[in-house]
Length: 71
Image 1 (cartoon, rainbow, N blue to C red):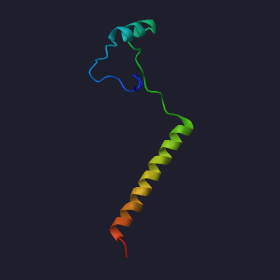
Image 2 (image 1 turned 90 degrees about the vertical axis):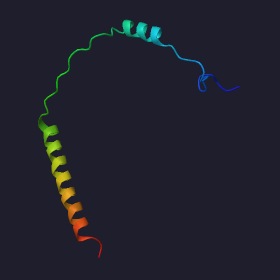
Image 3 (image 1 turned 60 degrees about the vertical axis):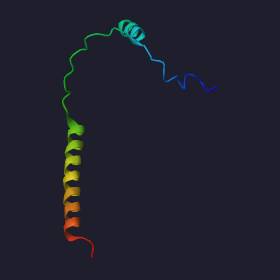
Image 4 (image 1 turned 135 degrees about the vertical axis):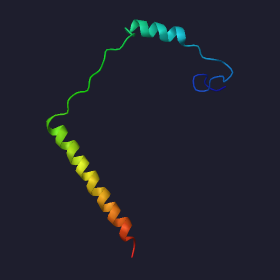
């Protein structure tokens, strides 16, 4: 007989609404606090600009490669 946890009966329905509601209540669920975007500063800003320049350089190289083709 297969393990019921790994092979559930497909004809049974799973009703977890009461369990989830109690979990949410216990964990202080409800309205979430509003989030704001963190400012990007310092080395992170430099790294992102470096990635942008790298992507542009790679796009240029790929374009050159496609236009010249294989010889």
